[in-house]
Length: 244
Ligand code: BMP
Image (cartoon, rainbow, N blue to C red; front, side):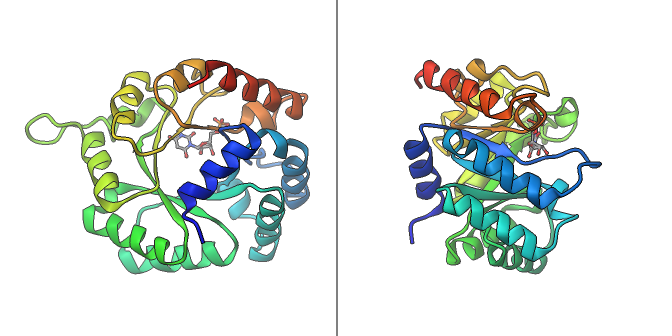
C-alpha cells in the first residue's frame, strides 16, 4: 500500500484539485450521514479529500462514519480525521486504531505532546498505512497566544513544532491561510502544508497558495454556500489559475 502522502498527491492529480473539504455542518443540521454522503457525491470531482471533525465524529456512529469513508474512497478521495490528537502515547495509539478501523487515512495531531509522543504516533500510524498531519500554526486569531509563544532564547513555538513534525516524519503540517508570513517560512521545509482559513475565516485563496500552501482545507465556504458544487468548482479553478 502506498503512503497517505502519495495517496493524497495522486488524488489531487487525478481530480486536478488541492481542496480538502471540511464536512462541517452546523449543529442543528438533521440527517448528518445523508448530508455527508450527498455532499461528497456532489463535489467529488472538484476535491481531493474530505476532513471530518467533531461535527460528524461526535454525533455519528462508527458504522455511519465508516459508510461516509467508503463513499469517499469509492470516489477516489482520501479522508482525514480532525480530532487534533493531543494525549499520552497509549491513548493516541488507541485513537488511531479506532480511526483507521473506521476507514480514515490520516489524523491531525498536536505536537504539543512532545517530540517522543509525536514520533511514536507517526510510527504507529505508518504501521497501518495512515498519515499524521501536525498542527504548526492554527488559523484563528488566538493562535499567536499558543503557537506564537516564544521559548527561552526567543524561538517561536511553531518553529519547534515544525522541527518536531520534520523529525517525526509527519506526512503534513497545518498552517492557517490567515498566516501568510508563517506559511512562506514553513513551506521551505518541504513538508506538505495543509491550510485552513480560506473563506469564512477571511483567508485569501490565491495568497495562501502563493505563500506555499499545498492543500486548502475549506469548510463553510462550500458546505454553507447556496450552490456548493459551483462554489467548489470555482475555488478549484482559482487554485489551478495560480498555477503553483
Ligand atoms: P472553515 O473553512 O469553515 O473555516 O473550516 C475550517 C476547518 O478547519 C474546521 O473544521 C476547523 O476546525 C479546521 N481548522 C481550522 O479552521 N484552523 C486550524 O488551524 C486547524 C483546523 O483543523
